[in-house]
Amino acid sequence: MKSITENPVYKFLLFPIGQILIFALGASVVLSLVTVLLAFIFKFNVTDFDLVERTMLILPQVVINGVTIGFVYATIALGYTMVYGVLEFINFSHSEIFMVGGIVGIQLMAYFEHIGTLATMNEYLVIALAIILAMVVSGSLAVVVERLAYKPLRGAPKLVPLISAIGMSFFLQDIVRLILSLTTGEFNVILPKFGTFDEFWKLAVPGMEDPLRIQIKSAIMVGVAVLMLVGLNYLVNGTKVGKAIRAVAQDRPSASLMGINVNQIISITFLVGGTLGGAAGVLFALKATKLDPFSGFFPGLKAFTSAVLGGIGNLTGALLGGLVLGLLESFAASYLGIFTNGAFGAEYKDIFAFAILILVLIFRPSGLLGQTVGQKA
Amino acid sequence: MGKLLELTNVHSYYGHIHALKGVSLYVNEGEIVTLIGSNGAGKSTSLRTISGIIHAREGKVLLDGKDITHAEPHNIVRMGIGHVPEGRGIFPKLTVQENLEMGAFTVNDQKAIKDRLQLVFEMFPRLKERISQYGGTLSGGEQQMLAIGRGLMLNPRILMLDEPSMGLAPVLVDLIFDIIKKLNEQGVTILLVEQNALMALSIANRGYVLQTGSIALTDDAAKLKKNEMVQKTYLGIE
Image 1 (spheres, rainbow over the protein chains, first blue to last red):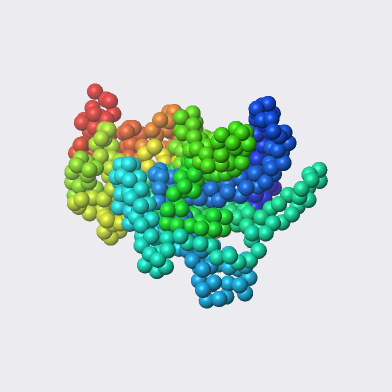
Image 2: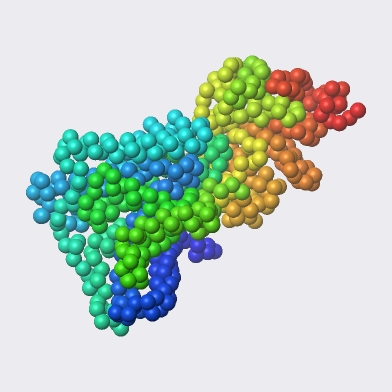
């Protein structure tokens, strides 16, 4: 008799979705509790309104925003962590791969607007096409970058490909800038307005005065990200290629003795990471509505922080890290001003993200989930 | 019985270190051939040169007379050379089953994979008990069985074993050597690298003695066992 854990529906659908749900809910609940506790502590500082009441009032919205951006971070973070798992180096050009995805996605929508079909096309189809194109472009770009900038350095000391990655990152920023200035003459790429994505779904929650407002955009971001994560889980755990990726991550010489073409698997890893990054770029563009050649830097750095927070090299860790970081950022942005009576504002949220990076590196360098995919026994 | 595998005047380097200085040897189909020698003599390097992990700078590696000196490891595996590396090279975070399936990575026939899995489990019932455990959680002996089993999943024409007895309790060493002998009786050609020269020479047909990167001596295993120099240096007999 086969146990339930061997059932493919459970293994590749229910289990990963359940895991995502638990992580999202768990992180939300823990952070909410901490925030409410802090509200009680700071209550006596704030005299003009009831701090606890105000905290509770905006809490659901803050959680929704945090989870949304958290999923985007998680999707980018997977690109960092997969490459780290296989090659043990940080691919700093991944933030630019992500940025290219976002810009390509917006440009496609702008093209539809230009030829006048944007208003008449199904809005979800437009988003889907933009995401698919971004995935193709970013995925191929990641493979090309690996071939050009990392493969020739395969045997070099670990610092060398790292520097090459930073160089590639600057190179891609400026190439995108060059292309944009030659074609449109405008560095800022603006998401055209179409469809109903900015509107809100209103969910009446019993016991609450105002209905819960979920922007359609946010729902799309979460939905697409979850789809990507489930797909990745299937690829890595359910296919022969995925098994080969894990084998290469754990022991490269042994993997080649199994007849695995290691260079090919490394290319596939970059392809998968780049594809995820490209999709995340379009999702991020929906939220940011405006991108420029340097927009990849901050989200990329935060996704990297998420990957380190979760335990770099660990795929589940990247998911958890992304969600926790997104939520923390959202909480910091919303509550810092209220709790400190306006002394600190939302602009300090980035400090939180990077303070986490520093704290994790000092106190738990292996991250929340502790070990890497490529850990040797 | 033709020469299945042949090395002619092979020179290999690790960076600037000249590790193999003109090694020539051959393995006939159906034989057990052993390479003995002390640490750093070039035993593992010979195997690594054959499987393409490092490439010979001079000389040739021939399989069935075909030059494979510059082929990549993953292609050499496809030609039927199995290599069970020193230190076993188990994937620690793959299950026993997945480790074995990796061994058959180049095989596309699902039924053949199933049959061989069955064969490996018959040979190593212990592995079947551990089927869903991670490779990294196995004991040293079990890992060695897994490494050999994984090498067999390929149904190789020649299986190269690098120090299969290393770090194992004496009773397990006997077991592993019994299995090597049994495999050979079933028709698998074997190239065996061993520090345990006495055991290796007891089951081998022929042997080569490597000293600092070159072949110092070669003969039938039984004769090597009686050779004075071999006895003194490798068998500890004064």
